[in-house]
Image: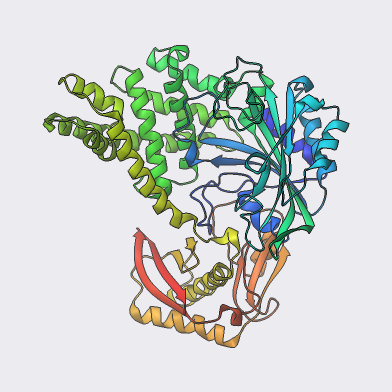
Length: 599
């Protein structure tokens, strides 16, 4: 069974249960600074789990392409991938546990034909703050799941909130227990001394390789109020299941790289390298995973660079090049990468057009060529080094992309050894700095719906409208980044915005705030939004119904009207201040950027 078949089967199954199939969000979300990439199906739906009305109703289903950066170093084993698809279904205050658990069990056992004997489930065992999830336990038993296939875990395994445990949840935060489903491959077990399970033996959440989580139903039923968890009036269901992992379960093989999409890529790689997967599993897995992820990023208009999403893409491609170079006896056949991209495009007809292949190949191959030149420079630099140590080896890694094993190989020929611990120390110091820098990306943002972010997000609508009035209607939003302290707004414009123009834009925005115009939204089709003059510029698919936010009179004179998911204030007096543009600069050819605050 291919992933295309499983995906379609899943969407149709939940459509038959009254769910609306929604389009997946882009891999790089516009207007969301909380993360580099879409990393789960839940992520773009957080506003609706918090109470906003979704244009497509209360029962939703999709398959969300996702990337998780933290898994890059894990790739090489039999189950981690940087790019994956997350099958998801949601209830936004509609059905709950007694519908969700039987439905997902029916899909797995009746549609995918997974053996019931191979399925294990887990529930929340409860703690001082929240009682045991007895309801889920009884539902699983009623479905015929044996008691010895039902496991209970604490908050680290079977509790969800964006802030952590029930005790860590701040006022207003939502969360709840979850129930995971595991497939038992029955492979040889290895016990782990670090096991947190009470009997210290193999169990579904053990990482020995026998069990693989294939789905998780999160029941968002609590909210923190006055220091206590209270039941929500709108209880939500959020299910997520790894498509590739489900495919691995259908072939009863714990190695996800044995499913068809990866098998085809591995066969292609074997042909070009004249090496066998069985003898080079880690390298093959890294190459096919990283090039698949890079291809989807290229589709999302990400290009390799030294910043943010581009840096991740560069890292993926360069890591794949190093592994391919080693497989090919230190020589790279350029056809390796072009053929892999072509195979990926062919394997995902739901996401790619046939004629896209050449363009995507070019994006990736340009980076391959750049890296070759960097490697050559690095080799020349390495020749100048008289005495190597771990820190210098890390500098070669950081500057030229030299992996430790390549430096070891070069300096072994000179009779020198590299202190691996010293390299590791330098690497960890760099990693900690990178995490600290990345924290700025995750701070605030639309997903937390904080008052500050809501005010600044509303202000971007005012700025967008004012820019178009002052500079011209060619101005189009190209993206934004909003923290609790400031907004950043990118837009199409081919020349510097003069101080006089900035002053005019500020005056125009602040005059609307002084009028205390109302801010409201209506649900309508994209066609109706067009007819009403609503702006929407992003290269994305819209649902049948969209939210159109208006600053001013929705049926009369307005200052701004845009398709947007929110959040927004309800009147401009709630901005509590005046908008001040603090900086204007170029981003790229034809794109400018402004920073602004509310003072």
